[in-house]
Amino acid sequence: EWNLDGMLETMWEHMDLLRIYTKPKGQIPDYNEPVVIPARGTPSVEFFCNRIHKALMKQFKYALVWGSSAKHTPQRCGKDHILEDEDVIQIVKKVG
Image (cartoon, rainbow, N blue to C red; front, side, top):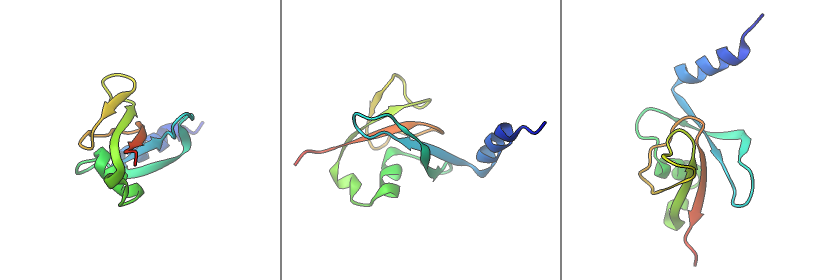
């Protein structure tokens, strides 16, 4: 019997990539289409926001993070928080 789930997980680890899931406010996280970012370097909230859109950091207020990088659920984080594989993130923007 083939262990495709195990092989897929091993591939993600060897490619050194992180899967970050987005969560719109008031909705459940979208586990179907993660944002893929490299694990090497500094996979911070700021790096994630810049991968989504360059102007997002100008409106950034804070992020809510669920997952292994969070100390509690959810954790309110700034732009320097380091993300880990399969974290869920919700970006809160400044009003006005």
